[in-house]
Image (cartoon, rainbow, N blue to C red; front, side, top):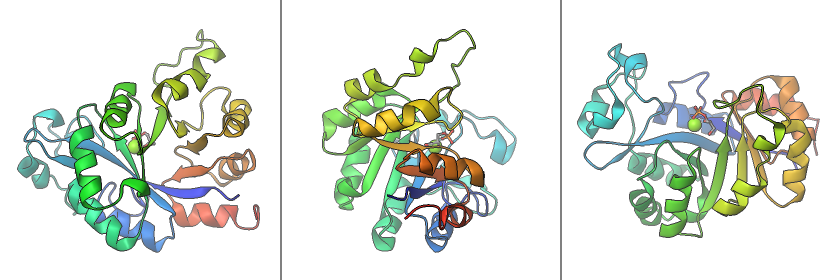
Length: 241
Ligand code: G3P
Ligand code: MG
């Protein structure tokens, strides 16, 4: 089966990342799903925002953990505003667009599930995180919501053996439906088909290169997270059934 094209932070090569404009463009570029990043505000809301501080947007490096919703709203995301999770779910429901919600921190599960239920989207999302704790919290609030375990190479050192990247233990402990590995993870091309055969989805990030997209599709990736959904679909056209 052809992999899902998952728009990374929306169609973020062509529109301001993690904004409703990027999500709308991803829809127009025929993405099958949208990946976006979630952070808590200091006053208990959840917003769509990637970084730990504000330096990319106002040059001031304020830690986002201290920002209220009103302060997030003042940030200028290349002419767009930071959306709340509620606004994004409202949009996704009317656009009929499945979402991959990435929890950038633990502590958001209860509010996140409350909103997913309010917008009747619990079966339209994969919730992923680098933090097992965030996924365990989600499972405790609602075990039926699909969980994706993110794995990167931030901790990679050349002396770390390949088995450190063997994902089965973590996937089982989390009860994950999906593995979300970095596309350059050592050993990925070898382990990806094994993870698929074990019954997990494998959604790989972040891939814009046409050859790499085709290779990962041929290896059986269930999803390809890309900044360029339209170009990714074109790269895969004719390669797969
Ligand atoms: O969810 C995949 C990918 O978005 C993880 O990395 O830093 O782009 O959120 P990052
Ligand atoms: Mg992300």
